[in-house]
Image (cartoon, rainbow over all chains, first blue to last red; front, side, top):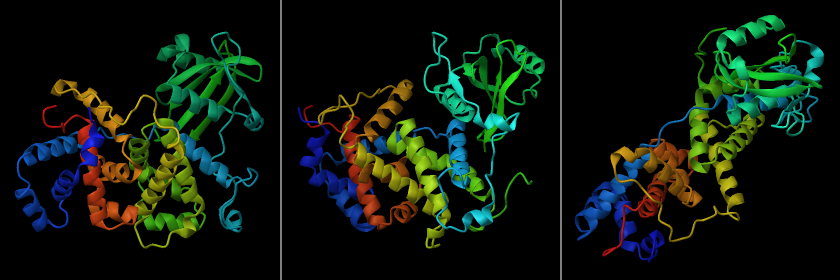
Amino acid sequence: MSGPEGFAAGGGWLTRLAEAEAGLPDEDAASRVIAAAGPGSDRVLAALATTRAELAAVPPVRLPTAVAARLAAGFDALDDPVSGNSRHSDDYHSRRGPRRRPLLLTAAAAALVAVAIVGPSAQPAGDAVDPASAAARVLAEGTLDVGELREPAALAACLDRAGAAPVRGPLLAGRPVVVEGRRGTLLVLGTGVLGRVRAVVPDEGCGAVLADLTTGG
Amino acid sequence: MPLLDARSDLQLLEAHRSGERRAFDELVRRHGDRLWAVALRVLRDPEDAADVLQDALESAYRRSAGFRGEASVSTWLHRIVVNKCVDRIRYDRARPPSGYGGTHRVPVGRDPAEGATTRLAVLDALAHLPADQRVPVVLVDVMGYPVADVAAILQVPAGTVKSRCARGRVRLAGLLGHLREEGA
């Protein structure tokens, strides 16, 4: 059985007909080619129309929040003179100033916080990463393993007890993590701003906030 | 801060070059959905698309001085994304998708109720087009961009875009089972 490549291999007539259907070499000549195409051309033209219709029916997509956050973090890194990256022109940093979107952590030292995502065995399941990367990873996975914090009332109460700012957007993703040796739950919350998410980590008993940052957008 | 930035794309790019902190963010906000769609539909894999989009936009971010104004900012951004996609396809060409042979016919639902199945088959089939056909088919037939705009993005004549689309549609029609040999 010959497959679709069979059409291409012997496809001079078929290709010419498809090109005419696309308006080549020009509309008048294309009309003449189609009119003279002979038996079978209707079937081919119908197949091409069906193919076009199916391509046009592919649904639109929106830039995922996690990807937008990744882009924003990447731009931040480009603006960070200590990251090793640099703009094309050497004088850029002198005009541009310092890092644009610092992670809004609850303490300055939290920039050095390392988050380990916890696996089924309650042991860290992978290398420790920064909170923004952990949030992006959990978002990309679509994980929502937060126990009772899935309930809005429980979530609000937990953040209140921990002394964190209240919830401003939907709970997008989350899972258990270990932050510098302390167990907690990473919660990725929407902020109402496209591409901008909040990652907050209350500890196991909602008694303290281990990390709280807003990134992206 | 205003909710909407009334400046043109070109004004935003100039502001970015001058060091304005959020100008490039606004360009991404305006064009990000479409650039993402192009990368995702050309590459199919979301992780690959995310990698390529990040690489492309960081390249644009760093090298905005290279924008000469011969095309629109949107065309320039699309061109960078498309070129990165083509680079990725060529890089991956040594690792073709498993289970695909040259004579494989992608199963397609014929019932309108099987639309979701058809869409999956279309995306599957697109991934088997060579890059020089896949990119214009995605831009023209999936994204709905005018041929002239695609010609500007790809920096080829409009006739070349039409020809590559035509050849890609023939190949897709075969992959999707719309074109069958006589007696088949």
